[in-house]
Figure 1 (cartoon, rainbow, N blue to C red):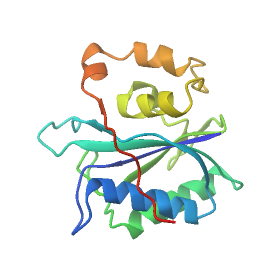
Figure 2: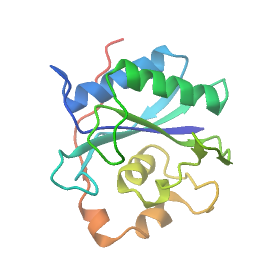
Figure 3: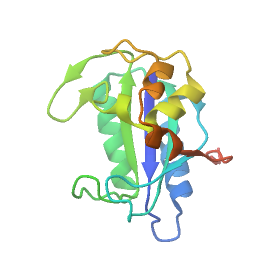
Length: 171
């Protein structure tokens, strides 16, 4: 199975952060990705600059018949279509689509590292995964998602909010 994480902390013209993520999800579905499960929205403070707008994130459990390089190309194309402009690291962004795990593939290349190198340290990645795939284990660390959540700092565990709101996709 494939785990994706989609985040946004900027509105874009008349689109909210929720809209950005919902549209990105719809574009993924329209692009040959078979979505199996989608988490609720989760909200976290922006990192490392807490003065930036809060982030919304979702997790997606999916299947994809092509390889991880093609999925990476596809996600970058969708980000660009939605108005993302590459900026400095940790700057606010309209949309961010990360491949967290691609069927357990381990790869370390300049443009793509799998599994995502900081996934095991990020509350906004682990909590959505726990919601949609509670038996998931990190391909390198071989630790399950519950163990990884329990290893987060207390601050990281309390500064995330699961919203009672889901992705809105018009099919």
